[in-house]
Image (cartoon, rainbow, N blue to C red; front, side, top):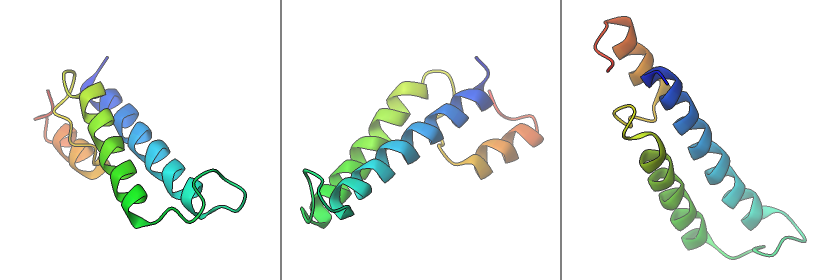
Length: 78
């Protein structure tokens, strides 16, 4: 797998898990409704950790598409 593809997958994991925890806190009739900001902060932190651990060995784990594509443009991406 190329580093650019790994970064794309890592970003997808980060956004999916992070937005999922926000939806869980904000949506009516969900198990985590009104659980608060600490749940959102913890969820985003764990989402970032999971994404970096997933693709960190393949790429450098930026999880920022602008950084990844910029490094790929100047041929400094793994």
